[in-house]
Amino acid sequence: MNATVSNIAAATGGIAPVASFVEADVDSQLFKFNSDDTPLMNLMLRAKRVKVTSPEVDHYMIDAPKSTLTVASGVQPGKTQCTLPLLPGEENIARQYTTLLLKGVDGFERDGKTPTPGKYLMVYVVGHDTSTGCPVVRAVNGEKRSADDEVCLLPMIPAGTKAVILANSLYETQKEVDPELLMPQPTRVYLQKRGVNQVVSDYLESQRTRTPFTKALIAEQAIANFKVRGNRTLWAGRGGKFSISVPNMGMQTVYCTEGLRWQFKRELQHSGRWTVEKIIALAKMFFTGEDVPKTALLLAGKDLLEQIQCIDFSRHPEIQISTKENKLGWSVTNFHTVFGDIEIKREPTLDRLGWSHSGALIGEDRLVHYVYSNEHTFEDRVEGQEAKRSGILTWDALALKGSCHIWIDGEGESSAEGAEHLMLWDSAEAPDDTLAAEGTVFYLVTDCPAISPRAKSGSMWHQGTAGWEEYSGEIKF
Image (cartoon, rainbow, N blue to C red):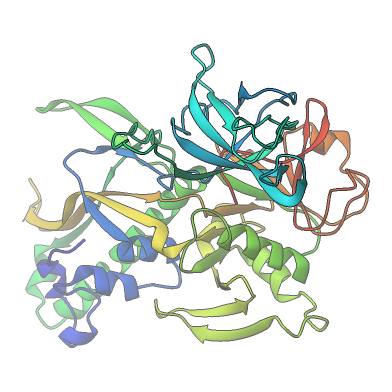
């Protein structure tokens, strides 16, 4: 929205141009207009703007390369090389000549006899298995039958082992390597055309003493309604396209954009009271993943906001709480943790949508505003009427970028397609079968020996085929 709304800007009712809610720089003025009532739309107006040539866009949400892979099934010891079985979708990421560090698998000293607890085994990718596509590896610092042996033996590699991707290692005369296979999957984003009309009769136009102020009121109400309804669409709209028959125009296509609520790939299913430990866990999950944002903005429904404000912080003097004006000009509650600051602001639209116990933790610098047609205005005569019609048209969409964003679900509703279910667990008892069977990933706020002796506070677990397993998934935290 960066064109002049000249017809409405002229109807200021004596308001000075600097204070008018519509000027040449529409983005800036629309941001300030009803700013507290439509936070998400205001974020869109400040987000990275991408001009596109079609109302259908292939959007790549996750573009950060993976840093770790996961061993899908255990590997028996004693071989000089073996196929390293990885989770589906990870088979071809580690190309030939890449080195991998196997966390939790101890290596050996150069003599090949002395184990090195805590100093992990590193393996070297020599090729790929033709049937599975998984990498074939050999040990770099494994066990040796004799200290003079050049080839090491691989130890036992348990299922669930994390393989950290390190740099490739080339032989002496090598200069060519396989290209990296970074092929993120796009999602189709539809850009929705939205508009607002204002009709003023010729009679009103002729009453010059009343026209400026009256037209300003009409324009103000029209833009307020335009922003509020648009803000609801940005949250809860469902994506799709269809054709309709238009008189004298034939078939025309209508595009509906997908709301941000349905774009989140991480959902925290929360119940019970919020505690300091849960807030810290939330900050840890948000700020310590592969996709690290600069800021954390929590847009919260009224009930979620109340619960967080009522937390007892008396036993945690290291957590600083203050009210400040952020760089967007909003008055926010700022929670300072060692992982980063979380700025909290109420989002009234969530209350209107029935999500008052929920909220969205968003990386403000991880939003994309796709624009197909810049905001523009029109003015014409209403056929058969003594009146003029003016209006604003825009054609755009808002999309999440990166994997840091978290939707906090306090309503117990259905989750977005493909989203991971997270739950903060603060009990020494294991979750019951009903919760565990739903595929939920549990972030442990306290030690939970009922799950496993290794189930320490800060780790994540889920119910696998062989019982409780430490979590490893597509989106890392």
